[in-house]
Image 1: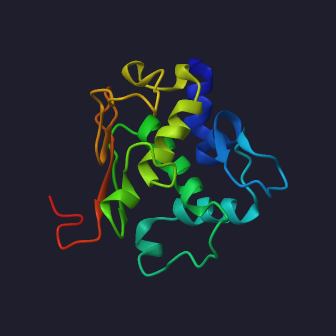
Image 2 (image 1 turned 90 degrees about the vertical axis):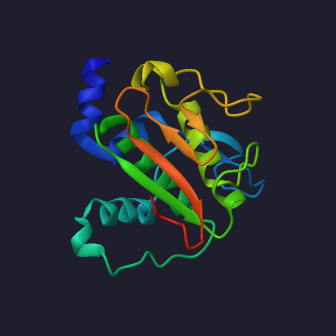
Length: 171
């Protein structure tokens, strides 16, 4: 698995997502089936990953123009997970209209619960030891996973959440 962790770092989020994650498809009218499916990004999702890979100073005034229901949130969460696993220093904040939109236990539409679901599909050997065998539906989160917060127990890298308020992104 050391070789695979090295590949993930070298080849980036596209490789990691395609080779190691599954995505939950709840829609009954999906052309690909329903339930946990291999996470194979479609071309628009790949273009989103390319956009996210550009230096921040080059994309500071740009936005992702997209219709709903094409998996942009999920691909961005996959990219967040890649950073959370591979980066020694990573601090990312997800912001949405309400706190429940960001993180509401047992709500598969909530951003950080979607991230929990991606973590649960990731091979344990690629996750920090303390983060293995995550059950997003357990009554309580593990110590490294708090409401609105995931901290990589080995590196300290974090993914946080906020509602759209005056306090969003403030320390």
